[in-house]
Image (tube, rainbow, N blue to C red; front, side, top):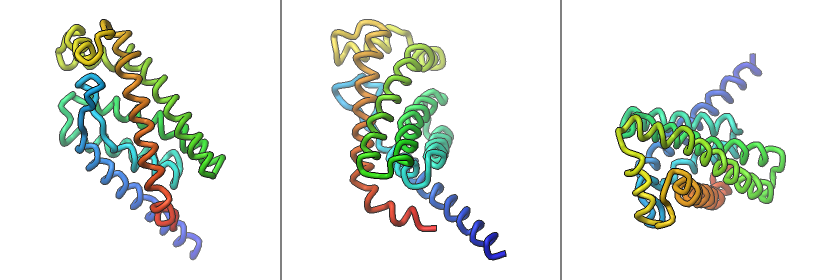
Length: 202
């Protein structure tokens, strides 16, 4: 009986933490902003920070849940891309968080966390390069009715070497994702030490 109650309390605590981190991630997702060095359709936000913190403190599944809940809430409240942007944001976060959290689980040190976010950033950048090229940008164009020339033109506006979809992904999308992954990781490092004792409480 006591073991059952303890298990229930632990599960409730786990769900409450996921809920709170999801709410924080959702709020941070609204605070997006462009970075002049990158195409205008790429917006920076720190909504992945709570999800990465969840991945480190509660495990990779928790990180995925936070990322999923955040994007579902965003889709139903603000999304202007008919879900395409939310899909991209979800996959960007998951491909960063899952490798980072898995490595940190096996190497539970500062060095393990650093290795995790570096590997996660690399995995995310590579996966999203392929996904953007073959799926996300073509879907974005189809759903929103933009032309390929208009989308590529947003890249050309900041980098004259961007002239087609391939160069847009290589010179625009991928550097942005690397920058975002490193920025999210840095903020997570600054916050995690202070938050982890609270999040690890049963």
